[in-house]
Image (cartoon, rainbow, N blue to C red; front, side):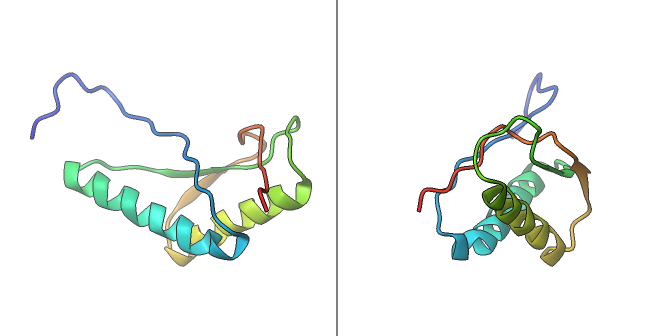
Length: 96
């Protein structure tokens, strides 16, 4: 397979609905999926974690839970990552 005229590809958001006790497994599964797909095409990628922005919706507790779950998964996978302090999307919602 040949990709023509592709200058770059960015997938910067996903919506995954799960219980808090499923966060780590779901995040690890997504990391594995992305890694597998990127390897198929021979692409390299970098990981970044953006934290809660000044203007956001959702509780600080939910943001902290989400941030810690992401950090834990990155550390479990032993992946290098950068932190973008305050650059997160404006929302974090708890459905349950």
